[in-house]
Length: 236
Image (cartoon, rainbow, N blue to C red; front, side, top):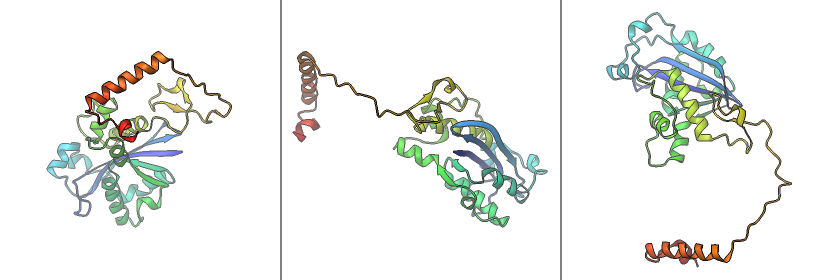
């Protein structure tokens, strides 16, 4: 499976209000391994960044002045993401900006060119309900090193997202993990073929009377501590 991790930087927060893309960063992953094939574009937005946006990304109008317009790089971007699953953190924001730029270039919408768009923010909210699920928060929670992230950058953030995604999904494509490749920058690698467990015989271990008595004692203590509200007693 070919997956693209994508992030953008913009002149502000409102694509509908006329804010524009200024940077696009993409990393390619195939079969849960980063390939080293990445795409990094700076774009002349033909307008200034807001003061708040500049504080986030630190990309000046002067730096962008000689960069190509989006219409000049649209084909390059679409060729890179064609047919892939595109993974974006808070996808509605980035896709909204990309779609606005594609419409100006007469190229439709992003979802017309890719296999699917996956929002890693929605994934994180399902896994960690009620918690902060920003990219920085996920890096801290999943122990992804982001100490070098002083300003936001599209390619840097796409790389952090790839590491976060690998740790969130934990290689669940298969029960077999290639331990030799686990130390790669892409995280644990999944074996191409799943193991056949049909011939595996599971052994049932019968507890001793002493173990049963100890277990009942623990349950009694829990029931007492809860004031007789333990679930198993109510069900019984």
